[in-house]
Image (cartoon, rainbow, N blue to C red; front, side):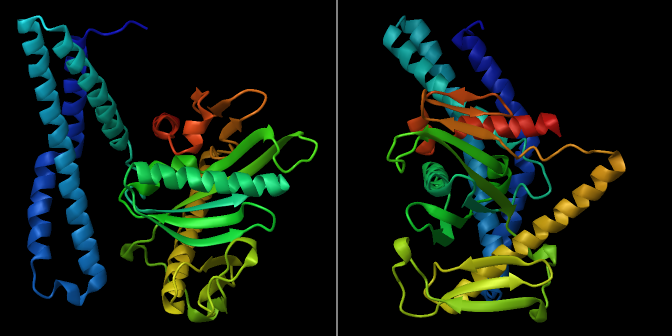
Length: 367
């Protein structure tokens, strides 16, 4: 592939950013900020805490989006000036610095461009992510914990707030499952492409004979429910159990029965939360997870009806979506997009942007 001249790259990035500005409709976003600022200044705003949180969160998000786009536009203008000055002064050092800034700017614009592809019904929502061990015994439990760390590190790299709701530890090592919330707009749209079965191939650290082991872990991503979803659950359809929170190896980390497990009797869906000291807070968090699971169940049923009408018998794109090979060679490969890398350490440390962005683009073209 031919390498573009820096000036041609500048033109390309300018065109891409102009398209992004058009899609996001920056003037309309500024109007929305004015409306939200007016709503946020109402004296009795916090009488309704849920509404207040919705207003302030949306205001912060829209302001951040405007700042991000205008910041990129300013950086693009600055880089253009830097190239002009380097050309006038015939300064190779200044030109090299401008080229480095242009490369970084191109990456930032590309990331924002991917975000504009998130136009699904629930893409703007926050996300609930569950990682669970599947086939593979103790290696699968260890792999599930590796994936949990990978996603939390990914969120930390992007400054996405994360709250772990529940972790079920395995007996020997790793976890049986863990559920956490990613509390930032578009978290669902971004992370939903990670849903499916992940496969790990390595020399098992738990095998005395040092044999190669294949293990599997599943990732489920749900949109957080909103007030407009109207997911009503009658009290008589829920069984509530309380128990003591536990840590690795079953050691007690709490001396009170504050952890909560909810069972939705009609569907037999079970969720639990033990991250808070208060039983009331844990129940509220567990109810949020249950509502999200029921919302997703409804969405899947509707999709199944649509597929039946269209004669669509294809399986879910999310299954068997990525392989992590640590032996006999090092490679992580996405089975849908064909994106791959040999830097397995970086991937497992949360550097999965390339996979996420390719997944979003793939989903858009496959829809």
